[in-house]
Amino acid sequence: MKTIRLVPIGIIHTPYKTPEGMAIQSKFDRHGTGQVKLFSKYRKGLKDIKGFSHLILIYHFHREKREMVIVRPFLEDKNRGVFSTRSPLRPNHLGFSVVQIKKIHKDGFDFWGVDMLNQTPLLDIKPYITHIDSRKNVKNGWFQKHLRGGKIPRRARIMKNHLA
Amino acid sequence: MKTIRLVPIGIIHTPYKTPEGMAIQSKFDRHGTGQVKLFSKYRKGLKDIKGFSHLILIYHFHREKREMVIVRPFLEDKNRGVFSTRSPLRPNHLGFSVVQIKKIHKDGFDFWGVDMLNQTPLLDIKPYITHIDSRKNVKNGWFQKHLRGGKIPRRARIMKNHLA
Image 1 (cartoon, rainbow over the protein chains, first blue to last red):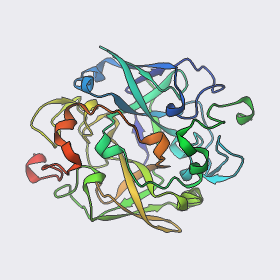
Image 2: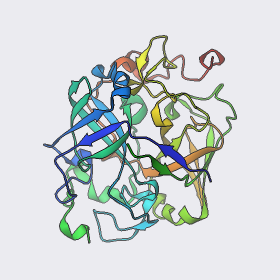
Image 3: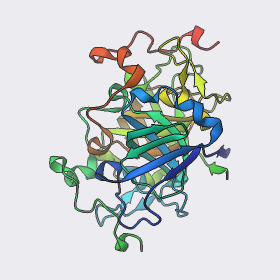
Image 4: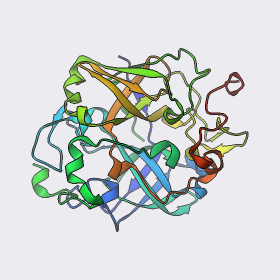
């Protein structure tokens, strides 16, 4: 099967030089701020994002080299099929986060909801649109028990023992 | 900036050999069925998807060669910054759809919500999780006026004149 070549459109800057202490999902991060800085040829593509509150970021887990089909997720000590998890050990190492716009600049924007490492290569930005991206009557599989009551789960940040 | 090489994990089969008549978003497709078929080395990664109703597919707009920063979206006749749209003309040609599982097979699954062409190379599958992926208090920018009342918009399918 043919290889697909992607080129980063910019860089995500975050407070996390290592995964330790970082939220496992942007939704679980209530305080951190990240910055997206686009390379100059892509900046005009930010036109019209002003009216949106949330954006989808697709990026590369650039520090992860392992690719596994069975993984142990951060939330529990069981082996799961990687496509039932959001683990960075996934094939192709594509990361996906919904973030909230804090401030727009000429070359990018600041956002809330940091769950990626500093210097992460950004591959795409899409507007988050309620009617398209928000679904009702969803079954959440093995995640459901960790997310009861809409609370942030106990293991919502990456701890040292997850990184072994 | 360094190129990132991705390898398809499988193929998406759909009724659409050409874009004409295809929904512009999976949410706007109420009847079609697509099939995901994974290459053999990735099939074990499907373990545990059974408990989920919806999956996120990330794929490659393999037929689109143009990359533009200003585009004309399907829904209206105005020029928009590409990152405020879901246009396939985007840099890196990454597609993103939330689909509903219809039936799981050993080598993949059937799904509802078809908005991709037949033979689309699949790059990743992630579980759609309400608490992580569904957001409230969202501002939908220029899309908002097209999506009032939760109805499917008038230009929800790709017409011949969009393809010029």
